[in-house]
Length: 127
Image 1 (cartoon, helix red, strand yellow):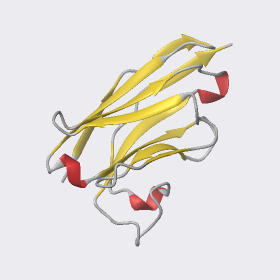
Image 2 (cartoon, helix red, strand yellow):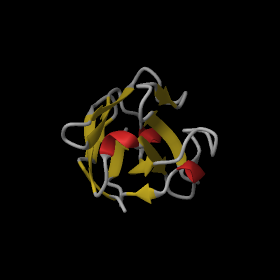
Image 3 (cartoon, helix red, strand yellow):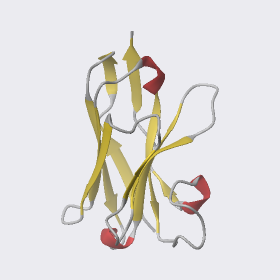
Image 4 (cartoon, helix red, strand yellow):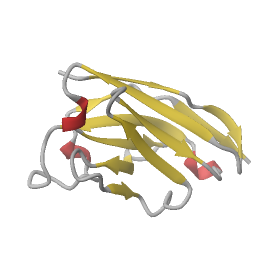
């Protein structure tokens, strides 16, 4: 069992920055692929960014590439999402997720890959 607790989020003007954190507990953090997803009102949850568990590969959605940075600290069992140049369309509830499953099960960008989810902070970007 893994527990995920996010922090950060809030209200920011377009062009601003925010940093989200996600603290994991329960099992060996470094063995998990970790990701951020988001869900805007009336829309389905969508992939934002992911960090592979062993390869160190990083993945981004096209919509955030070049603006968002995902990072992880395996000594602190935490992942982060630095969000720069925020746009109103980035407004959503952001959730971190953890997966022990391998790539043979599903793509690292797929919701069904992930077994554990945090509650998610709200990020609101005003124009």
